[in-house]
Amino acid sequence: MTLPPVSDAPAERARLDAATADLDPPLAVLDLDALDANADDLVRRAAGRPVRVASKSVRNRAVLRRVLARPGFAGVLGYSLAEALWLTGGDHPVSTDVVVGYPTVDRAALRRLAADEQAAARVTLMVDSTDQVEVLDAVAPPGSRPPVRVCLDLDASWRLGPAHVGVRRSPVHTAAQAAALAGVLAARPGVVLVGVMAYEAQIAGVGDAPAGRPLRGLAVRGMQRASGRELAARRAAAVAAVREVAALEFVNGGGTGSLERTATDPAVTELAAGSGLYSPTLFDAYRAFRGRPAALFALPVTRRPAPGTVTVAGGGWIASGPPGADRVPTPTYPAGLRLVPTEGAGEVQTPLRGPGAAGLRTGDRVWFRHAKAGELCERVDVLHAVRGDAVVDALPTYRGEGRVFG
Image (cartoon, rainbow, N blue to C red; front, side, top):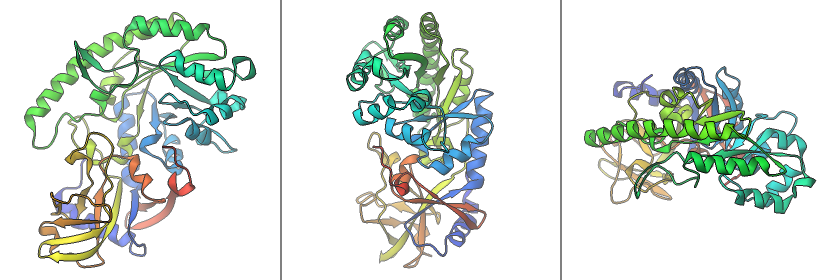
């Protein structure tokens, strides 16, 4: 799969404009054909391992249901306990298997979990020390609640002396540390250790072919090869040590950017991915795969302040992470537009320059791609589902359903 070539940009713009002609921007669309193709590609790359859908990169219940109904996907990797309770609750849950990917100290949500036997059977909490379990015990003592499922978060970063490559997550780094925590959890009343997770962000979340930076690409690929070898050995040892004291149901690893590599690790039983479904710009910089842009947003042209320049309303939809040019939205259709360096993407207006501005008039729209996936859904109430040149559905985002999980 490839991005539409520049020659197709006018056709893509015309198609999206036609589909949404009766809607006023700002608005966001989800191209269903691109979404389905991206989902198929994730399954192909997973090579038979089930893919747990990372909900933070989706943030739309209808889309989660659509993806989970496809072969190759199983369960959700959530980002909040309150979110997990919402997704697993009701008569028609999105999933009956949600692993919360981050530790929680949300006492209200913990009380709800502890008071609901069905929820306790469907939700798995993430832990990297007994501290998180002690918060749970203070809210609902072991004898007063059903057993709570927990997953041990193994740090997957690469450490070279004082150097740290990767994200700072769990303090549990070595097999010995994993075994020690697993032993304590296995002996602790009121919790059941059912899984291990190790997210290799330095591989899954760092593009190995950044545009226009070949030397950085070489360095990233070298780092990822070395880090991957180190992690494979350490993860295998840690999982084996944990299995000595706990009957694990799953070992989760990977992300959109590392599915092929992680799928070859015999210690891993399932993978995680979410961003690849929408294919935001941060995932353009990988050699192993190329998704189809599925989620885009449109902003209206409100001014023409100078020849070769237009201004759109809003635009400051900046992605989280280290500040940089790769975190800003990318004007995509019409081709030939760029942000103005001295202003960037603004809170209430964004100037754009380039040859693409020549044909734009006040009231026209500019289509952007977000740098990250699910964060787009925090800006809009609905993803307008597009197939061909027509809107075929309106899919409420978490925000559109009145839910904000941080």
